Amino acid sequence: MSLFGSMTTAISGLTAQARALGHISDNVANSQTAGFKRTDTNFVSYLTDSTLSVHRPGSVVARPDYTNTIAGPIEQSENPLSLAIAGQGFFSVALPTGSTNGQLTFDERQFFTRAGDFQLDRNGYLVNGSGYFLQGWTVDSTGNPDRTQINPIRVSDLVFNPIATSNLELSANLPANGTVAVTTPLNVYDSLGTLQPMTLTWTPAGANTWTLDISASGAGGSLGTIDVQFGAAAAPAVASGTLGGFANATGTLAGSPAVANDPATVTFTADFGQGPQTVTLNLGAFGQARGLTQYDGDEFALRNLTQDGVPLGSYSSLAVRDNGDVAINYDNGQSRVIARVPITTFNAPDMLQRLDGQAFMRTVESGEARTTDAGSNGAGSLSVSSVERSNVDIAAEFSKLIVAQRAYTANTRIVTASDEMLQDTINMRR
Image 1: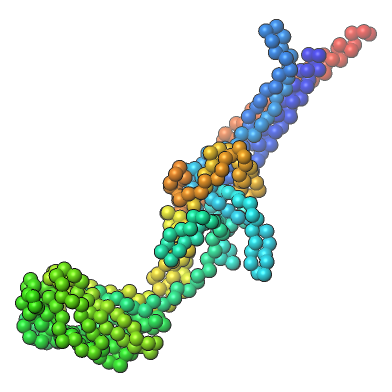
Image 2 (image 1 turned 90 degrees about the vertical axis):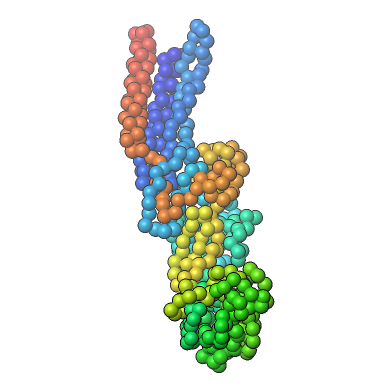
């Protein structure tokens, strides 16, 4: 029995070492595969009989020991859409199954991966090198994600609609002893995104008083006038040099009530051909030395002049931010967040089911999938413009290869010895 048992045990050793060699071969072959997780070998012994007086040989089995929790090195990439996870977790991805009426359809099962070499395909989806589509949360107009559902991220908003100017902000100083009119040119956008030139003209109208005239050539010329009062000219009077109130408004201009510390604004309307467009000019605050002031100086000093209108914009590029927000950049300087990339974690990620293309599926042993924001609740943070490489160490694999080869050879010697001893036993009767 011992001779046959020894041979059987040695054969199981050959099988186990052959499986270990297969794991090593797989690891070495994928040493440059993005997001690949190596498979180590765990040898498990099985006994036939083992007591204080007798031990009969059993067998050995080589089981895979997965390393899904061991991160590979993170490498910088020239691709701005490449993503890596610094820490625990996986990207949620989808696998396409075909198309219906020109629209892609996806497998209902959820897949996960660490391979973050994503790029835009011709349909505007973010796809990694293995063909899996990155999924994320959709966001509303304020950038808040909808965490109740996750879908493949697609870039479809290729145009940024124009926004008509509705607010102007001016910060400047009018010379206290000024005697000549000064002008401030500016540009606004109408509802079609067309640039419309305007002019603010400041004319001295007495002590501590200036008359503001707002004109726009595209809206028929002057839109009206209003007196701007400073210091003692206001009622009630305010600190010298600060804006105190408005008076004698004409045309479409209207000033805000003079209340200490409240915003000092002038509202007017202009029709550039698409109907009346209301614009508010913010000049600071009543009684405050900010915004528009009147202090000593040789000439008009403009410090800041801004407007909130936006022209028509076309798609320029796509970027992923550190918090996972996927933003479209437009050539008008604006951007729009269309989705957020979450991170999915498991209690036992080494128990996930492995699939083709460095992908995984949830199993009962792995626990439930928990999808959360990057960098929160135990999930790793995102590393943008980076790729996680394979966690295979070539030097370690070659060391394992030498050990497996020698162990395999040693088991063949046991088989040979057992065979010779059995032959000797058979020849005993001759």
